[in-house]
Image (tube, rainbow, N blue to C red; front, side, top):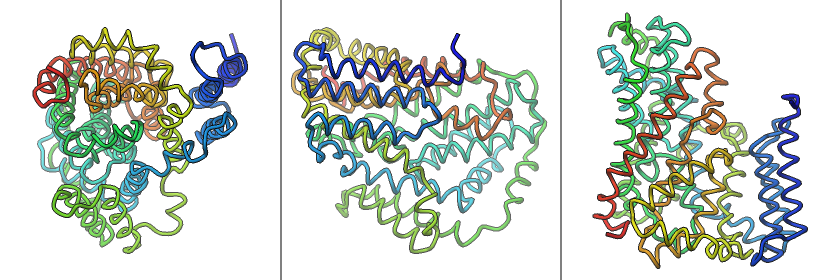
Length: 471
C-alpha cells in the first residue's frame, strides 16, 4: 500500500504518463495529432484536479491545458474563449454577491429571521431551510456562500437543540440545510452558478438557445420536486426518535442577538433585490443578464460594501480561472477535431438512446453518474465533452440542449462518496465534527440520486409537452 502522502503524487503521475503516451503515440484512429495533444493535456490537468498533489491550485491544471493546446496549434483566442463569454461575466459578480451576504451578516439575519417565525420541530425546520434556500437563491447565485452561511446557522440550531454530535437529528438538520442552500436554486438561470457555467460549455450556436425563460420553464418544477422529495426522503431515512427541546423563544433570541440591522446590510439587500427585479423584467428593458449583474456589483462598490482589498480576497480567483478554462473546452474541442471524432464514435449509442426520450434522459443520467466517480470536479470536464454532441442531438433528434444541462446539473450534484462533491469537503472544513455523520451523508447521497431518477420519470412527459424533448 502506498503512503497516503504519496498517493496523490502517484495518481497524478499515472494520469500524466497516460496523457503523455496519448500525445506522443497518437493511438486513436481518426483523431488528428492536434486532437491527441489536446486530449493528453486534458488528462494531465484532470490528474491535478482529481488528486491535488501538494494541494496544488486549480490554476496549475488550467496552465497545462492552455500550454498544451497552444503547443498543439490551437489559437490563443480559442484557448481563452471561456474568459470572454457572457457566462464568465455572470459568474464574477455572482460570487461577489455571495461575499457581500457574508461580509455584512445579511445572510445570517435572513436565515434567523425565517427560523424565528416557525415552531421548532424537525419538519418545520426542514420547511424553514426550504424557504431560506429559495430566498438566498434570489439574492446570490453563489451556492458556496449560501452553503457556508446556512450550514453555520444549522450548526448553531443543532447546538441550541442540544443534539449530540453524530446523531441522526444533528445530521438531519445540517444536511438538509446544506442541500437546500445548494440545489433548489438550480431551478432558475441565476439561482446558482449552474446557469452561466453549464451554458458556457455549449457550442456558440447552442448557447443561443438557452435563456432565462427556457431555463425556468424546464428546470424550475423538477428541481423544486427533487428538493421536496429529498427532504421528505431524508426525514424518513434519518428520522430521530427524540423531540426537539428548543422553543420558539430560543429562535427569537438567536435573531435578537444579531442586534439592529446595519446600513451595510440595508444597502446590500436593496442592491440585490434590485438585481433580482432587473433580471425579472429583462423583456421590458432589454439589458442582458451579465450587464444587470455587473451594475449590481458596481453599486456594491459604490456603497463601499465591496472595497479594494475585497477584490483580491473576497472570492476565489483560482476557481474562476478553473471555470473559465473549462468553459473554453467546447471551442477547443471543435478546433482540435475532437468534436467530429467523438460524434462519430458515440453516434451508435446516441441513436440507440434517442429512440425513446425517457431512455435517452435516463441513460445519459446513468452514464454521467458512472463517469462522476472519476470526474470529481463536479463532472464539468465530462459535461464539456458531452456538450459537443448537442448540435447533432438538436438537429437530428429534436433534443433541446437544456435537457443535457439538466443532466449535467443533476450529475454535478452526485455525492455517493464525499470525494465526488467538493462542497462536502469545504463544509466539513468549516463545521469540523459539529456537522453531520459521514454515514448519514452517504445515505443522503442515495436519497438524492433516487430523487433525481424519480424526477426524470415524472417530468419527461412535461418536457415533451413544452417542446424540449420530442414526443
